[in-house]
Image 1: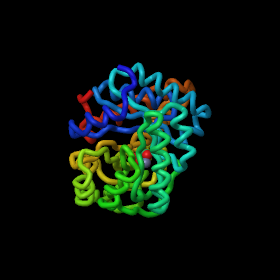
Image 2: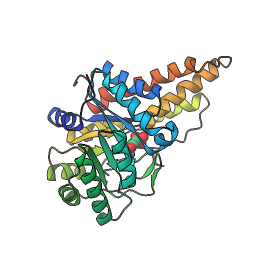
Image 3: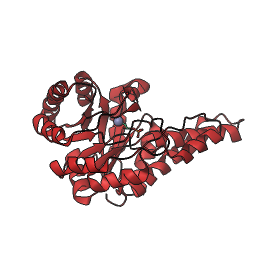
Length: 308
Ligand code: G3H
Ligand code: ZN
């Protein structure tokens, strides 16, 4: 299987009533964890790179090249997406580096500015056969280098008009999730009726859910049991994310749960085997935990397992 493409993968997801999982990677271990999980579960998958990862990996072009090489040798369909570019220039750089899809996140802008800049990115991207994911509405919380204080749900009519006016290929919507979780008593309520209205006005379209990680309290407790001091923030439940997929979400970004289990595995190793200092010895377990969490998402949240 070689690198696939967004058009085909989204079409299959829409026809198959499932969502593509999109996971941010930043190292060989995270690339391998996501792709091994996808192969194990026979699931298509999106490998993502974020603005923060650009800084972390130092040579961004080389890292995109590495992602594409691994994707080329993967037995299931994969495409490479750049997540949350907040400027057009960052999008152009991502496209020139070879990604197949780029997210222009104009959610912090006034509607007209978001529309204008998204349209500019679409023009540049489509000339080069690259897909564009845009964002309308605001998702609260902290994601990578992007922060939003409050949420601003996506308006169904505005979404329909924005898609028509910009020609964006996918649209991230704000329907209740948060980036990285927020302070709350229990799981956040997914706005199902709002999502149904958005989908009914623009049917069979790649709508995207950001903040798809549910931060189950038991995952946080596991990490804190082995020395973590992770705050019990809340997001939407896996059951609600799965129902959002049934309604018409066809891409879900989910990172925090994977990062939590990766960190817990390393903390546990350090606690139990303090004399060992070979990084391979603790990264192998962290990679396996990351992979297991992604496999769980394919099976139980995205309905994409077995769909390759
Ligand atoms: O763009 C990245 C995602 O929205 C990840 O958010 O880690 O809260 O799932 P999450
Ligand atoms: Zn996001």
